[in-house]
Length: 256
Image (cartoon, rainbow, N blue to C red; front, side):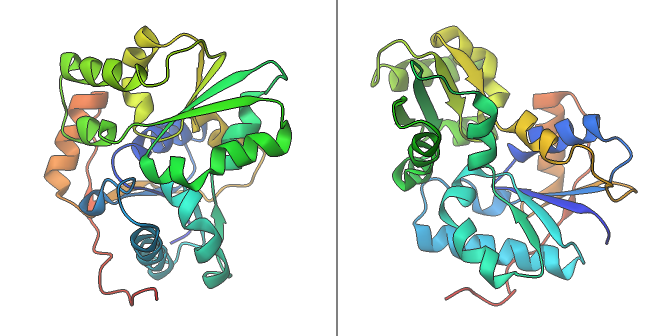
């Protein structure tokens, strides 16, 4: 299949898929929502690497040779391991892309909102420090936010959770990075609780494909979970009538 793959731990990657579809409506994209294994952020590095390996094997078997690792957790933990294994494929991580998109200034104070695994990896402070070591960086592990999004928690529940987590790092931040593709889904609620300009990975990924001769054709969405439930989630969160197909990633030989 001549298409560009997009993979995420769940429905957060649909925000990336939709942004790319709007920017390049004639291009062919295949989105894999690995809902069976979501969330990634509370798993061990070994588990995240093994899951990412299986996902890449699935794309490889589909004939897809270019994949956007839309998941910040997988990008921060697994990318350096799976790239050499799948040397025939072009695999894009999103950490450096996102940081470059922010437009850092020396007096910036940056807050990273991410999963526990992404925070533990230190990938965002490292990437920011490479550009400007004087920029101050804090991080909050939003351990349960992906679960709230995937389970369609109501606004009051999500807001209460945000207030509790943000109280751990009070302060004024000039820039806030939503370092998980699920977080833009509740961006408006986050904006009500935090000052500072909000950034996420979507535009950086769109820009990655700018001025390219992209594969043309239909686009499809797959889930490792329940396709009917994924369709309901997208309808509820985005008001889109999007069909999902079933993907099975297990049994693709395990990473060791």
